Length: 369
Image (cartoon, rainbow, N blue to C red; front, side):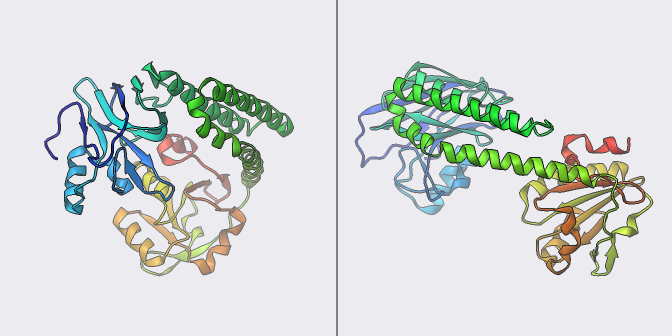
């Protein structure tokens, strides 16, 4: 099982008899990993690798093929089967399986993924550049028309949504919502055209249609809430922040006002927050570079104090405040409803930006440089 070929490795079920082959081969430019995979997502959030009679944990798809084989050996899954392909030195790959009906699968390089609808007999060539994963994805060959149609639907839907949120600073909310509605209705007409052109996609596209109106309303409501929040953040500018009080790593009382006299960056985070942790390296880099002139204050919220203390200590943050559940009403007026959240204060702790850029953006330091 561990002796895999350079191009293709597929273990097919011996207890199933399918009618036609599926082949997806191609080339990835600027690959981020060494392998690519096809798997079937299940409604219960487990993962079935294509042609599998066993369920493999979702995290397995992020591992290289040899690691997958090792895990399968450890689990003693004699009939565990999956589809993956190593990339050769040119980024080329080949995925093969045998299927008897049109199904939805996920293609992933372990970093990004995209949904595909595959059919028996498909023999397609796929190319993409990981710098813009979905945007550069192209298909040719037998059955490729439906692949390209689906990719265009994904991208059009993405553009419509992005255009909506790029319009948050537009003062005419009514016009923005009208334009979004018109564009989305045209998208649904295109979807109906594709149903006629590609009957094999009917089931998948019908499901998309069913939830379309709910999605449209949800997007509009989300836009309205973001619009309202943007106005709120703007209203915070030049107002005095409340002098909230928490505890430091030694359990001693500590007020925010202890950091007056310098521009102060607040980082609201929690131990369970993945995006928060993803910003730690960039945050610490700024703290190390500018920490003599700028106060970087790490504010732990919405988690257990003992967990916060361990993580803050391990990360080595210089200035720390923890707000327990009992005292979090102190920041209620700031509406720290989601994290990570960054704020920049002036030397007297008036708010310069209530929704500052993330450290990784490279824009945060513009407030003091």
